[in-house]
Image (cartoon, rainbow, N blue to C red; front, side, top):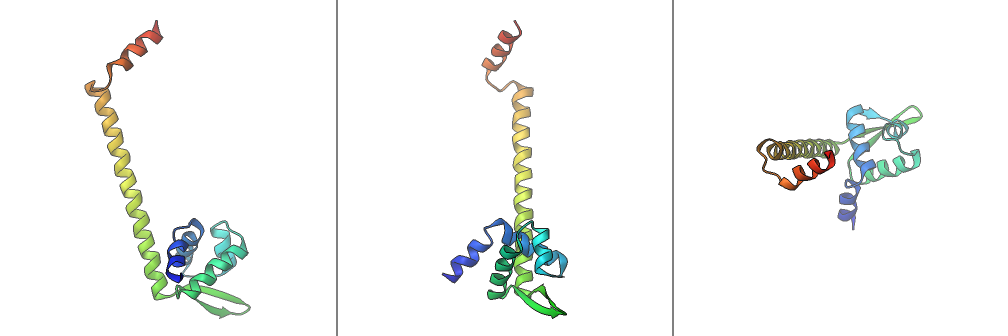
Length: 125
């Protein structure tokens, strides 16, 4: 059950954004994380509590506030998530370029369906 939950945790938008926000800020507070990820304080508190449960973050008392910091394990997860996101974005850009090349090939070489040209002629009449 615990393993299932940690997998589900990072397949959701807000926990992923929260982890990346903590990494970007190095040391931050739950209220700041909530503001960055556009989430409620209560929901962000639940996310950060789960992170603590799994050893992803640790708390450090700073006056009346608790600073949230990534553990070494949390830092590794954040870096892997960033790499995964970059890989997906790169693959999407490659896919977009491939689609554009195929469309250009059809337009330039006339490899497309000639019915499209006939339809265009009919509309012009």
